[in-house]
Amino acid sequence: MKKIILILMLFLLSGCTQPKDNVSPVIEERYVFDIYEIFSDEKVGLAIDARTKIEFNTGGYDIQNDISIDDKKITLTFEKIRSPEKGSMTTQAFSPAGLLEEIQIDEGEYLLELAGKNSIDAYLLKITKEEIILVPKKATFTETNMRVIKRFPKNGLSATCYAYENNKPSKGNCEYFFNEISKIASRMTINDSQDFPRTQIYTYEGDDQRLLEIVKTANDKKTRASIKDGKGNWYAEDGTMKNLLGWNTYSKKTPNLKDEYIKLKI
Image (cartoon, rainbow, N blue to C red; front, side):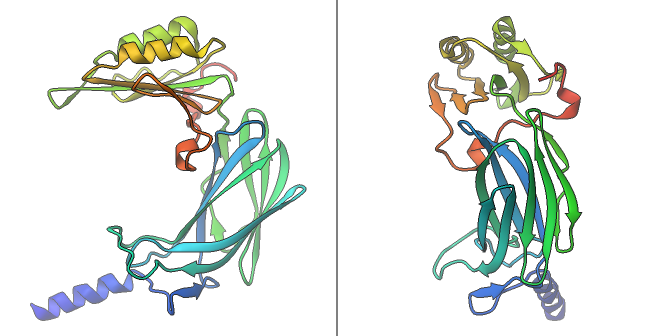
């Protein structure tokens, strides 16, 4: 029995990596990254979310990096891995080291360079009014599954509703919620699933007050409904409007427009 436990412990330890001396160079590392749009005022807001392919035996490891923008070139340099501070506690185990960077740029074409110590990978980043396109030119130590994402329009609405009754999913006031929005906004999606939570996408040119009234009326003890618009405003479940631009990066992520959901041209 002791031998079996010892073998299991060795197996688990072999699946993670522990940097030496708190800070370790990342020259042998490989990285996976994603790019997504975030709410912004005037320019195009993007977030670069990267992580190591290897995992560590606890969470809290960060990738030290530097990012710069020079005209039409964006350079993200991977430097070192920083371990958690001594005494810090985390319940997350077997996690990669990560980084999250925000940038604000104009529409157009850019060269995205990801620099390690021994290599520089290159991607073409193209931003139009409708799409964000990423084309790999040289990828030796980095990889991504992202190719094209649909941009969320400034006059867009993302309406989400879910309900529970007797600890089970129900429709609650969700049909009322979506029907009321459809009276004042143009529906963009064809998400007719009866599953909840359900999200529908619209375009809207009206005022904020009507949206707040719909959200406030739809919400009760069993229904949770809210709306986000393309300007970064969140019409929350409590019937108040909050602006997300000053919030953390994940909160500012724009709603995802899947190809199969697009009904009307943006």
